[in-house]
Image 1: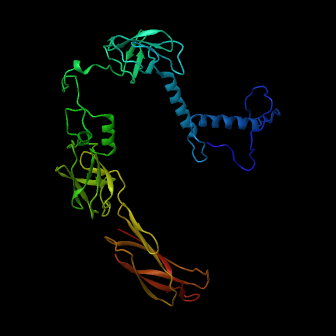
Image 2 (image 1 turned 135 degrees about the vertical axis):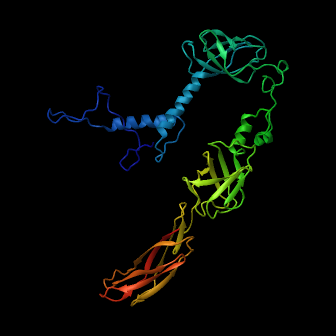
Image 3 (image 1 turned 30 degrees about the horizontal axis):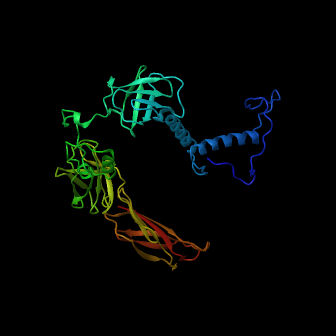
Length: 407
């Protein structure tokens, strides 16, 4: 979203004409002599500035190359409005919370939510007076709060049920009153260290959001460096995963494959690695590259594009993920008469050259160049062409360009 900035644009906002009678656009009607509505500069400026104000009100800088700023701004302003209507700082007393959001409601209604930065740790049953609409009791799972149920400095989430404020964010219960947690008993839970979270094998400790986020962002559970050989890869994940459809593995290749490949995960069976449902072509996996593989129930499908490599220039070549190899080049030497010429490819086709295309050069646009070229033979390493004169003009050729396809 950006203001008009061409050479005819005004540098300052023109003073608009006096407001007239509000109306609507019309396309006009030639039969009745009704002219179409004229779109004035006042209307365009009003529309443009209104939209720009929405973008800047959301804290965005207008950009001429971004076409989603109005959408972004509306979302940001909506989120800000939601926060302004549902969040406030507690200014009350112990066991008597009082908070008013910057966009306060005019009445309490069932389903209304409130996020409150608690000002005092509660010592027992407590109330909340939201937006000055009256103190209502705070409950947790239908009962009154226990001492220490709300802690100063913590943000607590409440929902009004029509009678009282139900604490949704969980009640703080003194640790001395809780047993040690187990898989069958609720109680005190020890936190896992960052190393334990990353390893993922401890079944008795809980992880923190930060620990979980760090492990997920590092792909600690599904990343491995490939072992094995170029075409028989192995990988070990920790903890040992259950091999089920949908399992995602990020694999860093140690070698470039030379043909169809398999992957054995955590010492399991060697399963086929495919791309687009087909076996991999040679070079589809590049040494040092990271690939995303998903288990589909029978093998690992490559989600990342197989490796493509190329050397650009003249001559040049490209190996495509499909296995197709393309090579090209030129010969700029002038040839007189008829005869053969040999060309060596920059690289050898892994299997065979399938097609050669040759185009004679005529850089000076002369109408006396009547020589063309024919393919005599081709192999995986090069081809032989024949200079052929059609009998008219001079038997001179100013070189040629060539293109070869193979696999």
